[in-house]
Length: 138
Image 1 (cartoon, helix red, strand yellow):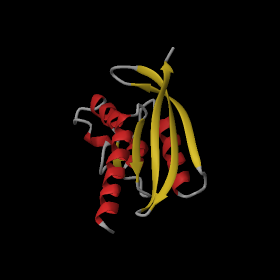
Image 2: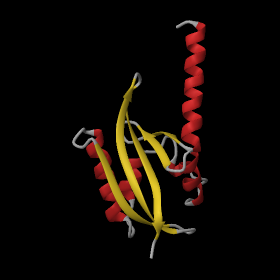
Image 3: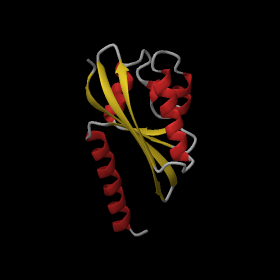
Image 4: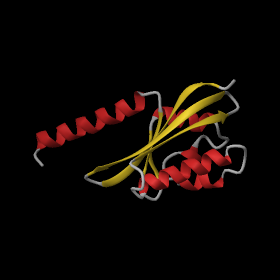
């Protein structure tokens, strides 16, 4: 790769990271085992505000499928559906998956939609999970 191509690639990578950081949906990129490899700022802020460990339990290096599988509260049905949907996308059983679910956090009670899709690049295949607020719970 020549120097100009290398600089163009670095600029493109930086632009993509900055764009992902600036959007409002909470976005995480998972590998095919369900490990979080990257999150955007909105995801990081959500993880931080909903945890006692500074958000680390829902950020890079954590297996998102394991987190979904471990939920035992009211949200268990939705977490199980989410994990199954992610696994279906990973296994190519479904091209994408969506789920509407209620979210009870210390700061808000809202409805969200989760979307799961996969994509491939030169490094392999990944899954994108994004959660978007769609309104307050009534």
